[in-house]
Picture 1 (cartoon, helix red, strand yellow):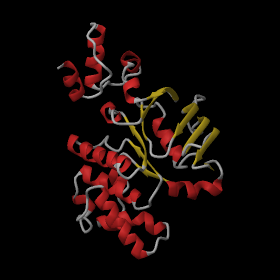
Picture 2: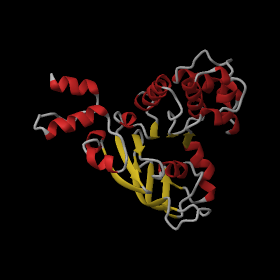
Picture 3: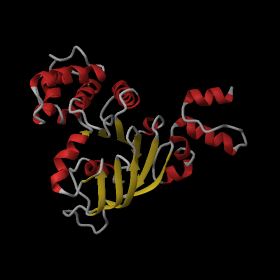
Picture 4: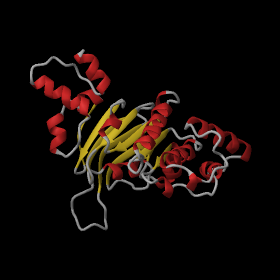
Length: 273
């Protein structure tokens, strides 16, 4: 069985004046060690799906299994939340302490981890996100990218199997986005942590193992980045941007220039040369 199994899931917000579910018939499997990116425009349902993975919400219909645990059974809620860590869009909403090390320790303390082990986890987590040496810093004195990396460290310190990131770079400048993406890719490739990354920045999807395209509560497409970004016109129809290199390559193909599937500017330059 896959680490994450989503079977026939609908979700309807009860307080909204609409009969249309926020999610409709979602079927998705994510394997241990995957780097999965979910893309879609605003209102596509991707943030709702993120909250279902951490049992902040439970399905209206269908079932979600995390490492074999049914998320709809209340006795599994705490177990699943120990397996699935969440990082949200605004790091200021996740930072709760006046010192970086206290913030990173917050999650493990709530798990009842002994103090000596917490110390090890805090230092290890900060090192993994490139924030070693910042233990005594005040979070409000950090840049946006640094704050988000501290928020990720707080999740890592809980030692989850999966980290779900809900648009973690949306409020950051280009340098902050670069820092966070390098951290996410390192955690996946080097530490083998399963990543579910939700974003509206298409270039953040090019290094993923699989890309899931959502629109109006449905999964429209899923596949490798190269297969997804060949669908230039279909993605534009639902108001998604295309990585520049992929769009240029598709245009050149339409002019009978033989260009292989590429995703980055470097790949495009090499191919043309």
